[in-house]
Image 1 (cartoon, protein in one colour):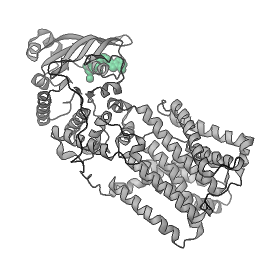
Image 2: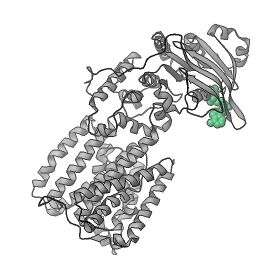
Image 3: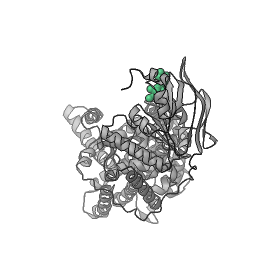
Image 4: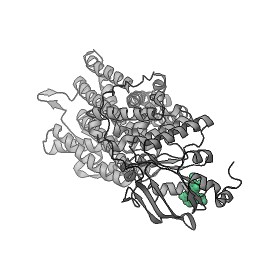
Length: 588
Ligand code: ADP
Ligand code: MG
């Protein structure tokens, strides 16, 4: 994030310089519009680029901000500095209502819902007498501070860009925080995020809300700058255009919002003049060009124009400034031998198939328990029933004496049961350190606002220190600043273990940690598992690799066709004729 801070400082310094330069007024007007559009796009970077939620409805939120201030200042004489906050309040209410209804929808339903929402608000604005129907409201006052008019020209330029740059800084701060890592994890699917203790739905609503608020501020500014509002500026066409800007600029980057807004605004003006002249009749031909441009960008430059720049920039390693940070608080661990997990007759039926048939076993503190069985035996399903990923048909699970049978995975994680995944789930474009810090999510408190204001510095340092220590604990200290996406399979799996350890677990659940590992890496893994056990950790291991299982486990639970075949110590299991029969021809 360092380079982004550098860019933003450069930009902040250049704003007063640009304002003082003898530029033609028309240029300043262009820059004003670019600033307003970029503010809306900034919301889309967070919502769509980072959070993976596509919205065509941002223009409608711009409209709420604009119409609120227009109607109130014209009809009640309330100061625009107050109507700004009333507009934000109305926007927040609508965003929360719409978000709560639509954000549970998956796939294409959300974009469709935002289209419906954009359209309905457009027709509402266009049909209300009170709002001037399609003519809109005219004669707004330009913004003033005391007796100084700051609503036009250079003063407005400074105001708009100051708001824009402040918002960009807040967003950069947010993305580099506990809440930001949670938001970035939304794209990797809710399964992983929830297993880290993150309430994914709440974060979806939060980023929807933030994006709407950015748009609303832009609408407030726009209304007083243009001194008139009418529905066409806030309709679906404009909603699509905002998304165009963000995607073409690079929707995954804060700077993509600036580049996209600038490029589309300038191109739009140019094409509106050039195309009709070229074709010989008037019309909105620029929309066609944008459509083609969008398709080409999506095909050849899917991460937008800024990705060209971003990939070229050096990525300086994060400064390690957390040496002196206080360690995160830890939970009291069970005493050696204490009952940690009690699985009691859990059952899962998929239609007619009983995938898990009344399985019971215990795990005591300091034990490594292996759950083994041929393919399709029901191991992963058992794992998912224990971790709260899917509901049980019947049966109960007790964790440290507490009934967690009906708890969702994020609640279970919060209580100190951490897991890894059979198929590694990580964020490729985050560093190893950040990926691992995600695991400590439940051990912090700093929210979105303190992240934006950077009052979370203390906690952040404690997170980073924890992540570094957990990586060093499993021998991955040399990978801190590597992008996770660059890791080979072995280190990826170890990174997941470090991430789980960051949650300060009393029970660690590992789903096939040796899958895809080379011989040497397996030996390394065995060493790490033994070391964790010696430190008092309890582990449930689902594993195919018999060598590894026999080597590290204290107790084995063998499943076949969903039922418990037998359980016992590794030597008992190896000697069991039933197990030999079940595995005959399957294991080397
Ligand atoms: P293992 O991990 O031991 O290989 P699983 O727990 O993945 O076995 O699967 C056990 C059985 O349950 C298999 O027959 C599998 O096809 C079935 N199964 C697993 N998940 C589902 C599901 N979501 N819907 C229907 N059947 C499933
Ligand atoms: Mg499995």
